[in-house]
Image 1 (cartoon, rainbow, N blue to C red):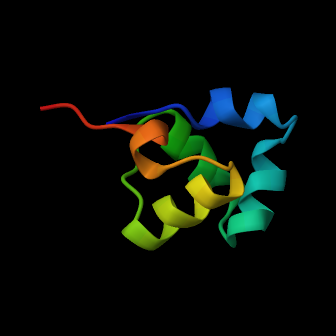
Image 2 (image 1 turned 180 degrees about the vertical axis):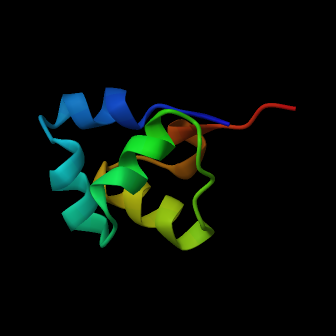
Length: 64
């Protein structure tokens, strides 16, 4: 799975730490998400999308 988290973070000038605090996660979790090494729970995906003012579909790219 690929994500556009880094792109959306840049739009709002947020660091990984900033986003992590907003969604109640660790900075490392955001790092692993951005690198495609971690699949988030639905709740975490929702919280990240909400924090970045977008949708889950816009933020996460699901590959077959």
